[in-house]
Every structure is written in C-alpha cells, then in structure tokens.
Length: 520
Image 1: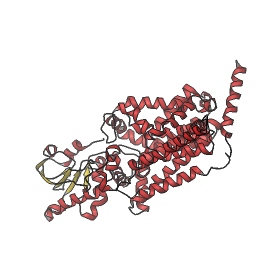
Image 2: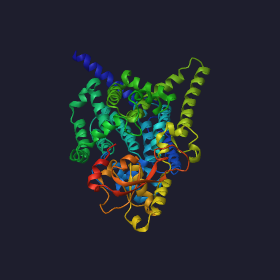
Image 3: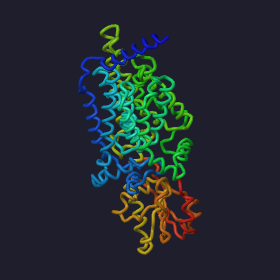
Image 4: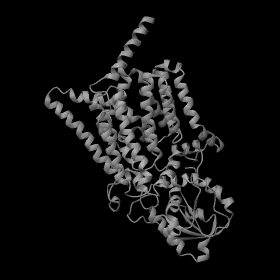
C-alpha cells in the first residue's frame, strides 16, 4: 500500500512537471497576452469619459472624504482609492476610472499567465486572455470605478498565486495571503473564495498541503490585514449581515431572482464562449495533470450552491472565470486542431474566431458607452445593462434642484437643505452642487445615514426620492416643485421623480432621522 501511494505521488509529480513545461517557447512572457491587456486598458480609458458618473462612484467620492475602517455596505479600500484619484486628477472622471482600466488589463494579463502555469502554449494563452478581454463582465466593470473591478482582479491574482503555491509551496503562500487580505479590505466576497478553496482542499486534496505551516501563515496574514474592518463591523452591529439579507430579498438595483443565478452564468463571459470555461472546469475535475488544483473544481459548484441558497447576486461567481478560461483554452485549441480533414479544421478555427469576434461586438455595444446618450433610450441596452442608465443625468438632476433652490426667497434659501432618497442623489449634489448653489445634501441611505442628520437650524427642505405621503408625516406643508428629466429620455431610477418643497417640519431631525435610515 505504501509503495502504491509512493508510486502515485511520483506520477502526479511527473504530471505536474509536464504541466509546467508543456508546449514550445514557454520561457519568457509571450507577446500576445500583454498586447491584449494593453489594448483593453487603452480602449477602456478611451471610452471612460463618455456618459458620466455612476451613482456608486458619486458615493465613493463622498465616502473617501469620510475616512473610516469600514462603511455600512463595504470595506474602505475603494472609497479611499476614489479620494486619491480625485485629488491627483483634480476631479477628472477619466482620472477617477484610470485604476479600473489598469485593473482590467491586469486581469487579462494574469489570465494569460495562469494558462501558461497550467501547461497552455502561446495560442492557448492568447485565447484565454482574449476570452476574458471580450467578456461582458470585464467590459462593464472596467470602465467604472467599482468594488467589483478590484474584486475581479483580487480573485484572479489569488487564483494565480494559489496555483503556484499548490505546485511549489513555501513563501508564495504569504503572497497569496497578502492579496487575499487586500481583497478583503475591498469586498467581503473574497472570504467566500477562501472558504470555497478550503473546502475544495479538504474534499479533493491535496490535503497534505494543510499540514504545512505556510498556508496557515498566509491565512493569518490575510486575517490580520482584514482585522480593522472586522473590528469596525463588530462595533457597528455587523451591518454586513443586514445588507446581505436585503440583497437576498431583491432590495438592490442589481439583484436578480434566485432562479436566474445559474442561467446568468452563461452571459457573464459570453454565451458563445461557455464551452471554453466549461472545458476548464472539466479539466480541473478530471485531468490527472491538474490533480494538484482539483480544489478549484470543487470550489465552483460549492460557491454556486452557497450563492443560490443565500440569494447572492449572479456576478458573485465571476472571479472564478479567468482561471476556468485559463484551464479550458488548451483543450479548446486541441479540439480545433483535431478536425478529421483540413476543411473541418479550418471550419473549427472559423467558428472559434467568430465566437470571440461576435462576443466582442455584442458585449462592447451592450456594456461600453458606445451608443450616443441621446440614442440610448431607443435601444434595449439599459434593460440589459442596468449600470448604463445609472451613468446618465446627474448634472441635469443637480440643475433641477438648483432651479428649485433659486426660486426660494433669499432668507429661506440660506437655511434650505436637500433631503435625498439615495446615495446617488446625495452624491450628485456633493459633486456638482457647489458650483450651482444647491443647498447641502443629506440622506439616510447607506453610509450617508452615519454622516449625520441636517442641523436643527435648517429650514425649507428640498426632498427627492421620497413619496409624498411619507413626507407629510414629517412636514406640515409639502408641494410639488419640479420633476427630474435627464434630458435624453433614458428610464433610469431618477427619471420622472418629483421634487418636493417641504416646510413646517413637525419634529426635530433627531426624532425623524432614525426613521430615514436605510442600509440597502
């Protein structure tokens, strides 16, 4: 029995060695993945100034001005990054989004590197990098400053490091822990990847990895980096759990019914490129040469089941697709080359090229701000890509509030405030309001609720995002003053909303404020 185990270990070590050295020209970085990565970054930067701020970006800008170890809905990394970019680039939208374009390029590059680690030749590396580059997910988050952009990079980088750590062991586990810890300071979703990989190691091995000290030291490093945010969460009653429950109940703008989670996986990359990542999942599960990494094949269905049961958003699995594409690229190319005749081989090459090209064309139109804003309302883009509508109309929104404020008598205008229904509306006033003489904005939504109620000395309230009947609970006089119009007819969350003038407040803000607080 001992001899059998030893023989199997020798075979697996030999197969892992073959993976490391497979294919011609593996020494040095191949040319195509870096070129594809640079192209992606350049394209994302070129379009990043079209349309306007996303509501989340407006929130991050304000959050960065309120530094803390955490916020009700996220750890601190992305708001602090927003603050830094705004300071360096003097409020430039393109400058704010520069990190996202760079991170998207790094995701592409790392996908190519992972393909190489898994035995893929130059063609496979280019295919995997290309599949990620044209994916719907990368394009939609790569031109916005988003926690998801950093999360996608963190999952991809951690996958690459885990492949190397499982193969080579040693201090590379500390690098994995560092990446995991930084990722946890951006989005708590990283904890699910760590848990999924841990379950995968227990169920599929190699379990002996867990007997060494390096994986535990890496885990300890990740937890130490994460600790400030954990302390903040504990001190604020763990709002993360309340937010998760709200998302599960459909309370987020990007929430989807639970039954859509699995079908949604078919479009995160592209419906036409599903066979590539499915081949990667199958290869992790069945290929003897990739046995050291079989935990990845377990982590994917485990996390899919967890997110399905807990009501997670469909894109929560997105961080695993780069590594699945990296594993699936080589068998995809083997299928292409295995045509029984030259004609069949050319046909397969054409099908694969067409799948990548068509994916790029469709995803670029749907996920990037390519269609002129004035034509967007006549397309299905906003219905498919919710975030596209959320990047339009914020200057017009603020100008509408400015017009309402300007119509007030001077003394009344001096003590007026804006009461906003969500952080996008409050963030738009914070970003554009000063130059338009809009009164300061307050909101009970997410982090804005922690930043305090209006002063008791405030007078007239310009309210938006609240139903009239609720406002009448707080004010003796409520009258319609205007309606929001983004100017391009796009049916986003603010379009057509009434703006109310509220006077004769019925209670102190200290009493009203707790009833306004919303964590999702």
